[in-house]
Image (cartoon, rainbow, N blue to C red; front, top):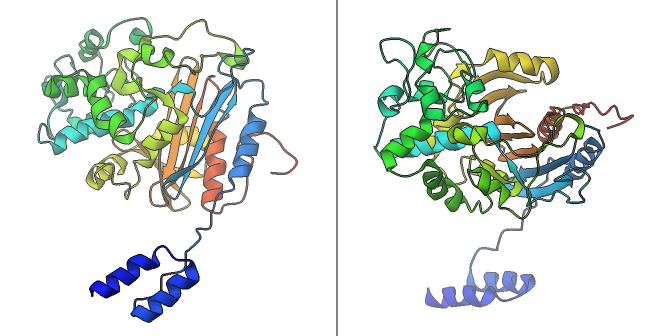
Length: 397
């Protein structure tokens, strides 16, 4: 046995033919021939389409990353960080995630469930002192909170956050609102209420929310550019400035949604956004599979999202919300993702967890046209006929 092992070790340093001969002489099995993975994606075509998109007047800067077979196979910047500045976007340019941040909050809260600190059946109002919801009885548990099933009007009091109010005093006023539906029976998207997740995490750990996320998400995943504050955005050597419609420069970054960090607080480069996306695949070994299942299982139907998709991106069906993630059906394939938008920035992540492939995009303007790139990616991934989802009206795709 020792002789056989030594022969195998020696063979490791030999050319392929010698390895095969050594294997025959020692009785070891022949090494398997290397297998070549055939890509389903035409990355060059997606790059070309992204470049054409950037010729549109409404675009200023954008970054795109593509993941296939569980690995980032493409990351690139397009356009400028600031219009007419000559500061070009690269794969290292930092943008804002906006509401794509919600998945980070759900992940972090679920890690506390695994630690035994809380359960998903716990009432959110018991854990977040500032959260006051309508009704005398507490009915909103953590599943309801993370899937936007509080029963109150959608985007409740976002205008107050945008007007400069802090999150906690704003949450204390939610109880004055009427009920649209009984908690747990309909989806009404939230930011102020959703951010109670950050308050719960701080209460259970005794640490600032940004510190907990840094320790439990950013550091383990090697997300070196990721942060959760305005200063974290602007201290980078390369960061995208916000722009309005058709490239109008916005004088400064609004700090408003950093006040609800669980809902919209994350910044990073597209490479780090791709790392976060890759961690959502079931074989990544970076996040427990049970936690991924909890986040990516459809919980509540989202009719408003489906109406939006039907207008422009109708191949995505059965729109639902899980815990911090949206879940869809694309020609029989389960697709998971989220979009985000704050003043001057947009972002999206969309992936097929079973196929271990996805696309991440961030851009510094308020336009929705880049969403078409996610559809062109999905068409390639699942062998669907090419469509001009970007509405560039090329003679051929």
